[in-house]
Image (tube, rainbow, N blue to C red; front, side, top):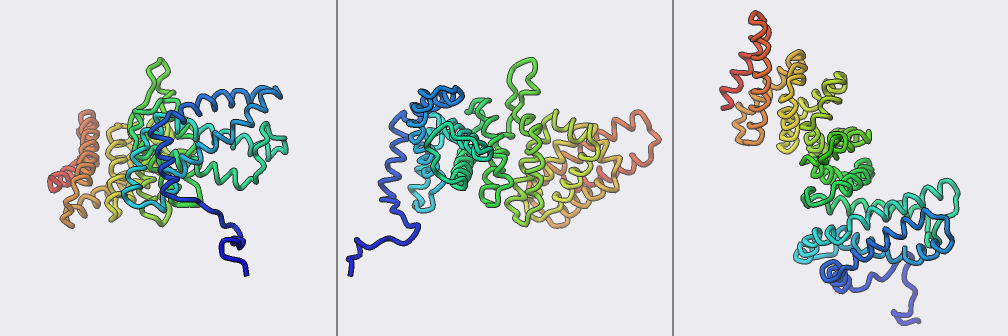
Length: 379
């Protein structure tokens, strides 16, 4: 009989090495050196060389790409594959996210995804690769790309978007949107949180055409952002539903989105107002807060308030019901209460502006009284 160490390992088995040493190396790579910054310079040069049909350049590109992907893979192992880490090591490694971004980690991941996307296009069209390193199958490329996108999501969940350049954020937001329809719920959730974080502040560039350069507008105009976040609201997973609603909520204070989605397109607006009204009656606090937050911001636009008042039997009565349930259940959640009161006050302001022009509108007067009564017992 063969001794144990001379026997063949089972199919698919590989030696991961010492996890402690591996994590020490990854941490050292991020914290103590400028290797990612160095890699970023190489990567920029190689991608531009890839677009030139020069055989000499191709050889140089091919030789350095394994190094580039090795860096990207180590970033993934550092912040994505943390299942074997203890709590202390996990916190220590997660604290390195800022340094990873500072030293070019995001750009490394983005450009690695771009290289893979180009290679997948070549495979689809049966073209020969511009590099000779992809002697691997299509599934491997897709899995790698997905892991790089997940790493981007994880980096963007907790980092303030204001610390990242406008151009880089746009690229990240567009790339990770595809994870919103991934078959794995964790990847959907992390992508939704990252996009919500990106949408949490205004990033308009200072230019004459700044509105069209806004990141939120780019995400909305891609045709995917809103619809994919909305699709999460119809899953059975409350965490996904909350994340989807929070993303939609952060669209609702953007003038361009409100004008195009709710005011100019009445059918879309009414459909999604129904969605927010329905979720405002949920028992899950996080879902309810996100839905009411969207309604509070939307109602600050007089045109949207008009839609709600004009369709009072569809929207208003349910809002009143939410207020009554909040009061009757002795709900002490200030976030729910603030959003409810803010929304109702906006509706009152709209009715008051209309009554100044038409004092005999009894319907508006009745609605005004219903809303006032609600606000009184909420306060």
